[in-house]
Image (cartoon, rainbow, N blue to C red):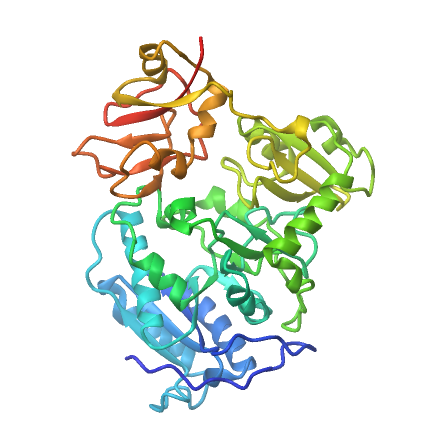
Length: 474
């Protein structure tokens, strides 16, 4: 069943001891996206409903469950009814008192990642079609913290105030100790965190209209591309407000779950006051960071992990080629850099002091002049032929491929300046990326592809793509 959105809640509803600034209008909803795991849905939905009732019930927050596995619909609806029985009167037909409604998607197709992407779009579209101004999407295996709703309530106004923001997330990819330390601290990131996130209706409708049919590494990797986010960022907490409970799933296995269990998780009650929300608007945020980074002593990689300058904020510069080893040493998310803002990551050392990680290519707004790694002035971008390496493409132009220069072309903007990218800009894993897919038989045909996991190599090529090469004078 479906219901219309509830009435507008009173402005200034109490959260903890503060009276948060709310957007006008403010008609939020939480949608739990579920597939076929009733044991997880029962636990997560119970937690969500408890938070919603404590926050004022359906007059403030609406709750939906979105299902996409037809053979599990009956079992999953049974779970919903069992959970609702704990809340007398919650199934009343009045739209102002009904606590929960269910959506059913019956036509999923493709592989598991495609079906998940289709479900995300369906769940958000269905929720916001009911007149809500903001929607929070939560997967069935993510338990929310007690202050989960407080996070969104206290930050929603920022999405109106600052056009460079478009979402608030409950997750921090770099959430294990010592990095996940301060439960009141929020930060900005241009790497979409997901895993319990809120977006305004108008921003969602814009991205929904461009939703990919073949996001081959997942919808979340697609939405993170600058061509799709349009450079907008998300607000996220230093200490995560969601915790994984699943030991199996499309993107989680037992090994991954053990790693995720090491993440910090907010354990206080629902009255958290998130500090400095007004300082998260872009200009104030960057100015404050510039001052802090400028005052921080520069350290070597060994010093960053050895306790040099105890208790003092320090800064470490790096190149992406070095990041995987650095992340392993510091206990950050392995693989691709996550949680960055304009090339800068807010990490912590073992004593809890701040560690600024600065990408020498992309953190130009925070680096000293002699720390910036610039493109070679005489270098230029060259289109490779289908199945051709950059060594070959540059040689045809009487130039040479310089490995360190390839990363400067590893952006949607660089690709779009050289290729038509008719199917948009997406994410993939490969040594021959950045590239444009020229093979009509490929599922990513006419997509431009970037990567944040592999390091581009001059000699690499793929039979289905044309590379974007950065070629330097011989």
